Image 1 (cartoon, protein in one colour):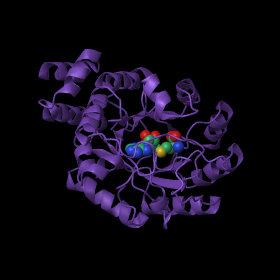
Image 2 (tube, protein in one colour):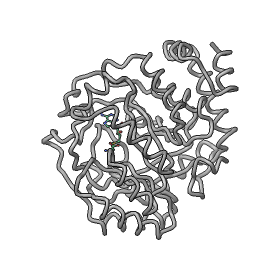
Image 3 (cartoon, protein in one colour):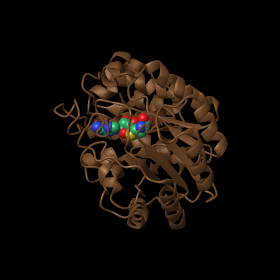
Image 4 (tube, helix red, strand yellow):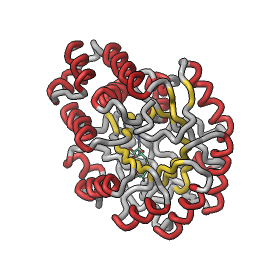
Length: 342
Ligand code: SAH
């Protein structure tokens, strides 16, 4: 097994059956994590990029069965930030030192190509990179945001198992999700995708397929985390995913795609107080603190136990830098694109 992991780290290639074997046993986890950490150090150095997330609307027309802000959750108190508020939070983050702002929301139809492009253009004046994470749009909308200055886009495929995808996403289609991802690539975005680990009825075989999909798609970023059952959703009483399995999927992703950006995700910290440090030591090189101000964060509950809902944007930047320095790494001072390797 160790030889297989070494070979994968050398060639950035692995057979699906070997991925499954690695996922099946916990005996070689430490070796896998160390190897992914070494690959990260070789290709990305010790810089950790800090991206500030603004969760600007929790209004959503979709009904993803795992998600706490799905349309049919009557207990979600809905909110939508104004363009001025979004810009103000972005400005505060830029003043603090953030070099990237991630704009994330539910699929809120209010934000049309017109008002989104205005928001993007205004934020770009702050000389920071913009990542969008606002769901499925048509090609023309993606084009308009790109022309307005958006640099990156995050759209998780969630699972590449078509039947599972279908069962979790009423009225959505796997083909359209792929169309979106291909559009983003073609339009010149840095394109990020990822999955939920430990979904009900998700097999290790399908997770192995997911990892190979990341490689085939040549994703610029991969964000993944454990599935955490959210109250008032159809999956509320299901068993959640394990942090260890999510870390293993992440480590394998680093080994196969050595130069991409991989965040230590908040869902990982929700399951363990040191979850993000464990991720940074197992292949991750990005961290994404929340910079949404006021009480909005408490309402953007994709899953329970989301960290730092009670901390301010200022505290979040400082705490994040301290966390990075506590493990002998340093905060990035560039926009942190994939090609800015080290
Ligand atoms: N509407 C945007 C943003 C979605 S929220 C979009 O469609 O891309 C960002 C991510 O949170 C989702 O892609 C999903 O993978 C994750 N997420 C949602 N519910 C979750 C849960 N219960 N547990 C863990 N992660 C969850």
